[in-house]
Image (cartoon, rainbow, N blue to C red; front, side):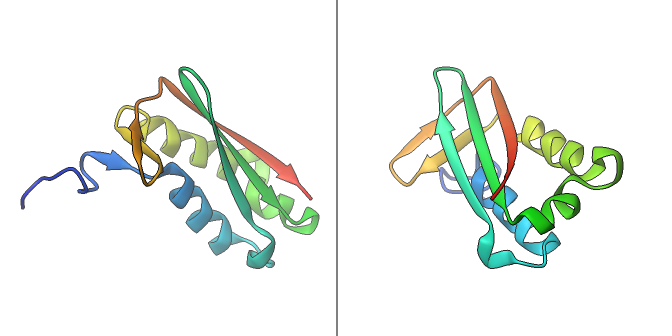
Length: 100
């Protein structure tokens, strides 16, 4: 298998990952919005969901939210694709879950 700059082994799309997971879990997938806010050394990902879907995203005891944060931390070492024109490296990716 060849590795190139567009290969998923070298780059990561944390916004797409969180969007896919969230839409798979909720009853109102059309209400899911994922916004990335890049900072100097960290990337903040804001996950906006319908108020009634908040429990499905957080999970019992926060297990689902913790799992999503663990996934984000595991890919934070890769080049992060925030938009089509740039690849960035961030020391930390922070997930904020916000109800609408």
